[in-house]
Length: 181
Image 1 (cartoon, helix red, strand yellow):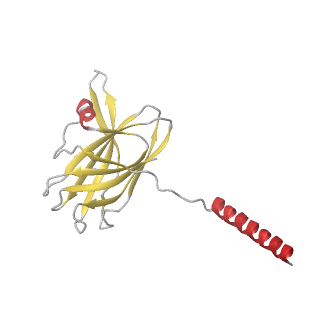
Image 2 (cartoon, helix red, strand yellow):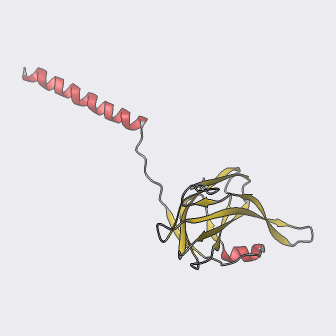
Image 3 (cartoon, helix red, strand yellow):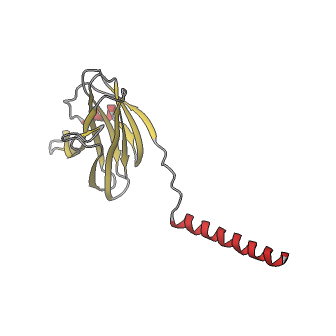
């Protein structure tokens, strides 16, 4: 009787192990991607589309998940810039979400534009807006949405500047998550 009970327990344990392994393969365990945190250099106003100026203030990024903090004066908005170079020919998705101000109850909002550098026939470089996100915010409210996404078809080596504008009443900064896939 002891040998029969031992065989039954062994089969039961092996079937349990097979079940656990199968369940793990069907529903793999997901791990949150590492978030790169960065306080961006902020500007109180922006009216210059000079690519040399943009190169001096833009933070270089690659594909990935970022948490950007944009400092601002309490009663005004602020601009910040990042620079992205496409590593391959494909469609890239630029997504902003999880927007919040330093005071949790304060409403924060903004938008982002994607700019690209162009060259005129006389050699003068300029930037032009090629995509924009509409308004994002801390909650869905009127025209703002918690999440905004722009999909852009890119060629290898294309350089894009992403211009953020954020605003929040009585807050010293606005923080947002930004993903490039």
